[in-house]
Length: 468
Image 1 (cartoon, one colour):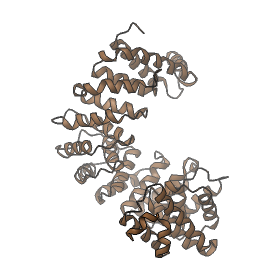
Image 2 (spheres, rainbow, N blue to C red):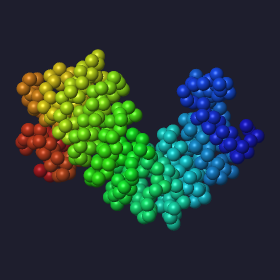
Image 3 (cartoon, rainbow, N blue to C red):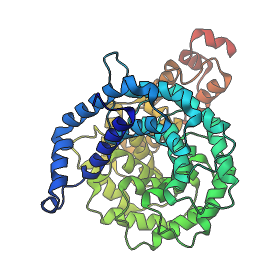
Image 4 (cartoon, rainbow, N blue to C red):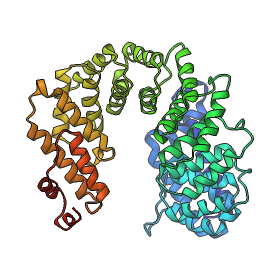
């Protein structure tokens, strides 16, 4: 390989990556495909180390040749490594992706749209965060005269990479949104691209009402949604609900499609739970949809595939939407009680469950006791503070359930003190901010406990008390 020039070296990496992608699947029809079986045995499965060593060698040989690489071959080299999930690391501690970014940044104005998309996709795929590269790519895209040469899937992949790596770039999001809004129609956008785009905007908390309206109008006008996979349907309604973009026509279109399906076997648990969560969060009432999903879950023999978040989101959604489905709630409760322990249950999912059952007027003391004990034994305050309503939900449910759990009021108040104290100590709440102090007062009051001046002072540092 040391005699290869940069073109042949990249072709080798890209070719091997395509072979791995082809043979890294379910072992079927091996008898009829002996070549595929041989390649599978060499590059996949137990021989993963052999594959990593091979791509490591390619990376080492590529480093001294990088100054000769053009845009296409830089993007392809990164893309090839991303396909197989390898991040070659050199003796100096830097990775091949570090070197590729250093070489690519000065050449970004020569990259074609698809090459830019492949580059950032590759970095996201292997989790190689590189703020300098992403900042320059964003500026390059924004600076271009128009985005007409970017295919819809390329735009989708670019935004997805930024969103998944948590890279903020409001200018990029705005530029892409304006481009899409300005299009005559969205006929060239496939369902996956449409769903991914609104999903990335919602996840990145980039508000753009015109974009959401454009996509909602397009989806609502379609004759049918048969080309939308369950994940695409779920991502669209989740995105609209998360972004706070109300669009009853869109939600009704999605609901009608799901209701008309013969069954929901193609929906994964997360897709089912996220769908009802989206409708409940958006305040879109649809009893027939909730009934369809409830009946599917009740009749399913695969509840073991539901994780704690799926359970939490599902019962929370039914309770929030006012769809009290006793059979569903009891089926979920019985399944959770069958677990030896709830070690996989997060604080957030526990709080959702604790809130949902009393909200839906479903009394299940055994479930409440088990979930409550799990929460008290291993409270993840940081997780709770991602959504202040989680903490409040626990306290509301404690109050409702107080009658038959006999929880001392002091224990309830002590728990909430811990939540507020964690928020301050983790710098998630600024004790010198009047707005945040107002939040503390409101939160305690909403939980049924009015703080006195002295109690409030105990929660905040002494140097912040002066603002009171």
